[in-house]
Length: 227
Image 1: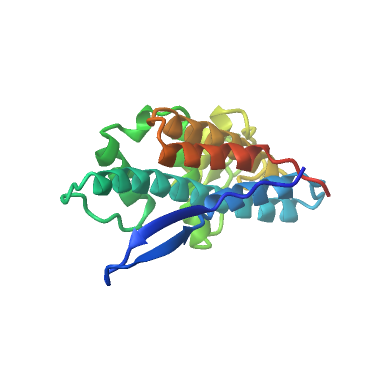
Image 2: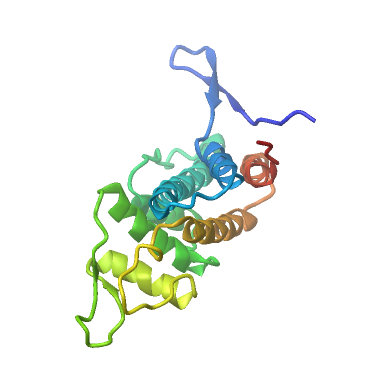
C-alpha cells in the first residue's frame, strides 16, 4: 500500500480582493518520521557516533515540540479569525518560552499539568546547551568517593533527571560509555515527547483543524519503514 502524505490547503482572500491557495507543510511530522527511520537501523558501536546521533535526535525532538505547539495555537487563532474576532493578535514564532506562554494564555491551561512535562523541561535544557555547542564537562570527587557530577548547571539537571529515571547510573569514575547524549537516552526522550504531544491534542475539540494535527501525529508515529 502506498504511503499517505498530508498537505494542508487553505483558500484565503488576498489584499486585492481575489483568492489564493496557501499550501502549509509543517516540519515536525517529517522530523518524527526521520528520527524513526534513523532508529530503525542498527545502532553504531562507536560511542562517539551514538552520542552524535543522540544529539541530532534531541535537537529534532525540541523542534518537533515547538512546531506542534505552534500549529495548535494557529488552529485556534484561525477559528477566532473566522468568527470575526478582531482582537485576535497574530502569532509570531519565537522562543520555546514565548510559545509556551502563548499556549497557556490561548487555552487557559498550564503546560505543567500535562503528563511528562517534566521530561520536556529537561529536554529543552539539554537542547539549549547543544544548540550553543556547549561542551559537557564532568568532574569527579578527586578520590573522595563521591559520584561524578556535571560542571554546567543545565547539564547537571539533565544528569539528575536521567539518574532518577534509571537512564544513567551514578558512577565514581569518568567513562566515555555512559553519557547524556547517547541513542538509548534519545529514545527515552522520544517516548516522553510522544506522551506529551498526545496529551496536548487529546483535550482539544473534535474539529477539522485539530483532527488534522492529530492525524499527522498518528501517521508520523505509525508509518512502517523498510531498509
